[in-house]
Structures are given as C-alpha cells and as structure tokens.
Image (cartoon, rainbow, N blue to C red):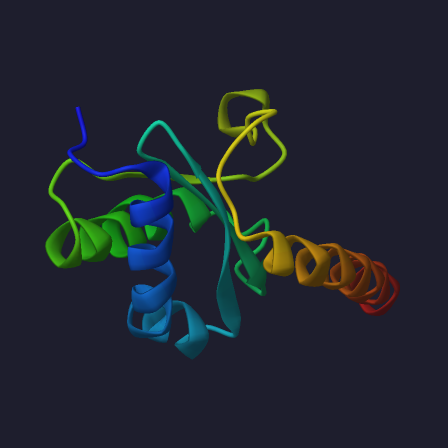
Length: 120
C-alpha cells in the first residue's frame, strides 16, 4: 500500500517527468502523464516511442525504475498503449487544467499519427 494519496503521487511524478523523460526524448519521444489511480501512474509514450516494440521495456526499465528511485520503491507505471490490460481506468486523479490541454494534445497526436502513416 502506498503511503501517499493519488494527488500527492501525481504532483510528485509531474515534477520529475522532465528528469525521467531525458532518455525517451533522446529517442524522439516524450512522456505524457495521464493520471494516477490507487498508486498506479498512467502515462502515454508519444512521438517515435508511441507504438514502438520496445515501449514496454522503456516503461518498466527506464520510467518506472527511475520514478521508483526518485519517489517510492513500490510505484507502478503503466503505459496506456491501447491494449485492454494497459487501459486507463474510468476514474483517476489528474489536474483539471491539464485534462483540457491533454484533449488538445490528443487531437494533434492523432493528426501526426495519420501523417506518419502517409509517409511510411
């Protein structure tokens, strides 16, 4: 059991995302914090990391490992990748301001994904 609330975990992860995302950024990707539910951190890998065959390894061996070192050793990180086992729960904690920005970002990413398919 995590000794922190979902809100506390969310804000701690949010503060550490720039530090954690250095590796992902070096590969042309980024990390988007979606929310926290019952101590589980839900992220989305974006850019070239979205849909990459190594995304599970990146999530567990880079993102989760680093956040465990920085925040709490029991922290679990889940990359919401469209599979049922990695789905975002119906209810979770997130900043309301960021949810509006996230909706805008999803639309932009959708367009980028379509463009990638055209050029590949």
